[in-house]
Length: 316
Ligand code: MG
Image (cartoon, rainbow, N blue to C red; front, top):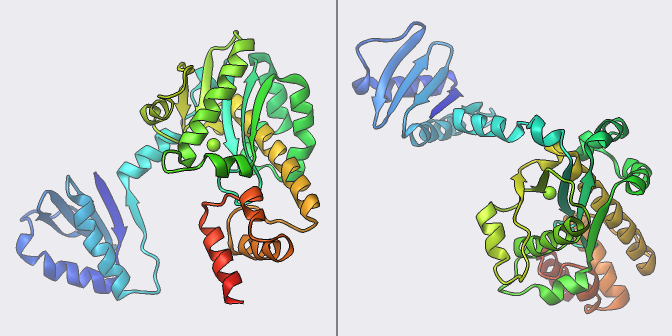
């Protein structure tokens, strides 16, 4: 493991004093010193670059990151970690075999939104549809605005097979318990849409799920399900690596937006997405207008927002 950070003049000074006794005899070019610190070799360069290498590099570096912060509170500390960089690179790798295949992809939305349902979708993309989907802008699905999604998804669902499940917040609240958490619920819903779609579509090379839990955890969540679809490739940032996942994500979002609109109209008020403080304000208005019980019907009741909304209300 290698951690590199940039230290200021004052930290440099402290490091020199601190490592005085541990300095190695030889100093690499442009370095002030090289020293041993437990299972780690520390090299400080004239430029202020400090490099920590070895098993305990993170522990050793952490001390100096904190020192640098303490001595220079207005500066942002510049830190590079070889392990995280490697992991990030690996996470961004697009496997052409998967990308250019006939594939089924599965993704969900709404799990971080206080209002609005959870929507999980599985979609099938045949190889020869890939250029058309790229043309539509599906490849950068994360960057598409809601307006753009409302425009292109109707075109997509005309041509590609998919299955969606909408879990209303009323249902969510009924199911949520100490034996049921968000990820377990997601696993159950993904499994359902995958079983539905794969019962109709047989001509696929890969089934990709945008990874939200490690595979063994995913299957553990399904241990009470009587039918489990197992031939899954789990990929983080799956929507970048499989257009089927990107389509699944967009279709889910499209349905979510429609449901959200509908709820907004029914309540006759503006509803914010997400789970921020503007959501709390909307929640208070809802209690005013419709009473506390209404939240159990239209919001994810176990979110922290509920407590904040009710506490605020009681203070009034
Ligand atoms: Mg996802």
